[in-house]
Length: 181
Image (cartoon, rainbow, N blue to C red; front, side, top):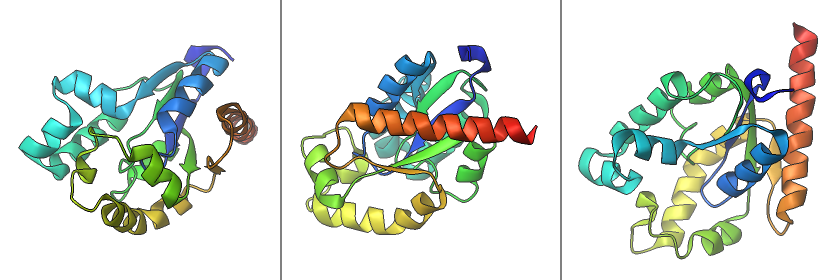
C-alpha cells in the first residue's frame, strides 16, 4: 500500500495516552505522513493551543479542530494524532470514521497523571488541582472514547508493542473495508 492510497489512521484518546509518540512511529513503519492535529492547528493559525484557548476560548478551538478534520488534511496517506477532545463534540467521531480507521489509545489515570505532570502546554490542565481536573475531564469523555470500538491499552507496555497492536488493528480494518467495496 503506497502512502497516497493509504487509508488514513486516526489515533484518538485522552491526553497522555501516547497518541503522538505512537502515531509518529506507526506512520514511519507504514510509510505514511504523520500529522498531529494540535500542531497543524498551531501552524495554520500562528498561535499555540494555549493562546487560542486564552484569547478565543475552548469553543473556538473546537471549531478549528472541526475545520482541520473537514478541510485541512489529506484524505489519505496519513496517520493523525488527534487532540484529546477532538472527538468529544457530537458528530466528530462519525466525521473521523467516514474518513478512515479510528483507534483509541487508553491509559489509566495514574499513568496519565505521571505522563502529563510536567506538561505546561495543556491549557485544560492549567489549574491548581490537576488530578481533580483530569478525573473530571476523563469522566466526561470516557463514553465517547468507548464508542470508538478499537482500543489499545498503553499502560506499562513497550512502545513497539503498542505500535504493533495499532498496526494489526489498522490492517484488519482496512481489509474489512476493502471486502465491503
